Length: 566
Image (tube, rainbow, N blue to C red):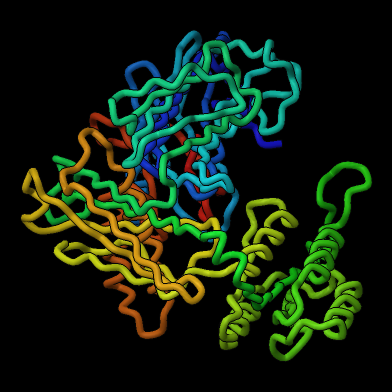
């Protein structure tokens, strides 16, 4: 189990006294601010480390800890500069904290916050931004994992602050508050949760702004999930966010940024009249680690058994006349067929026989070569290719992908930004399946945006089956007041990821791309492969004093940090 919260260097929990969570929603994105209050009830000082997991897809943009009048704040710097500053601190006997991305991924963030004297309190604040997921009923889901708000259990119980806890909530001695402010271009119809909520309070007559809170006394003994419902969920919408007054005009944070939400509707008439058979490419991990059990409980399946069962389920669920192929990989790879074959009774039976014989016997875990081979294969016309990624239960995820591939797909997506001067931050949209949404980020430029009555117009055209569809949104270029910088930072993160991908291309100007990534990362406070977070005193800018050791800490969303801690 992973202990979370504020811990001593012996991994024991520091008592948590109060949690305050503020959620700010702008249409389809959210900013989450959590402040946790701790107190050292021991008779001796504690060396404290803060640990928490991040939701998948979220981006950390602020971390600070305050003990007495000493505050530690994490700042983004170019990676080599951050390392040099860390080395300087080490050589002078000072304390510094260095957090940098790596290629490994487990969603846990960890950072030392220094010594906590007896009877002293500590406040830990962290802020992250995230895109809200679309649900089958067209609502938007926000999930606050219970483990983000760690539970305290008495010393000696062996539980500590853990990711899986079964103790009664009546034994959790802290108070908490959770408030959500929701803003949307379209009216808000309702907000639902399985947790008890105070009545929804609308903040304007148009009902586009609302506030809701958890009922007093609620304990985070399970995830808090909010479901937000807007009128006309398939309507194209646009939100303009003001730049930071402290930033230079012409920079990403100095200019306004627009976020366009594209969530196409799939009419029943189109759904019922079309049959789209996809191309299914299954990639099976057959490395030695797949012989490990799924969990430590008695009678646990081996991973390879679970993967085989899922693959057999899929094979028997495919529609006739689709195309498919299966790859196994380890230190090398091999495929069942030289290229994807048409699904029939004969090819299905051949594949089922081979799947039942698959073992975890192919050595290491080298997935690049099979993926290169797959991507080199030309797509089969009218058979959209499906890929499966993994932060959900495997069978549910792959069956969802199967449903997508059997439905019509939105293709030939184009956009018209006539009259607007802008720089696009997000990559082009190639296709969308039923139930999927795309968010488009763009930096707005020019004097037109400065006029108080300025209007913008964006149209999105696409093909759905035999139909050509056009969606248009008219919106004010006047930014919403006091909306924060969530849209700017999510736009920056999207552009950073695109630039990092470009760096891998043959012939790319790697130095120029790196310089642009570093500039964006430092401006926005969103980490990258070329930058690192380093913690310094807020006032003096000097590294915090103390001895150091080095640990490698995995972190959120396909990245991890290396950390220098007490």
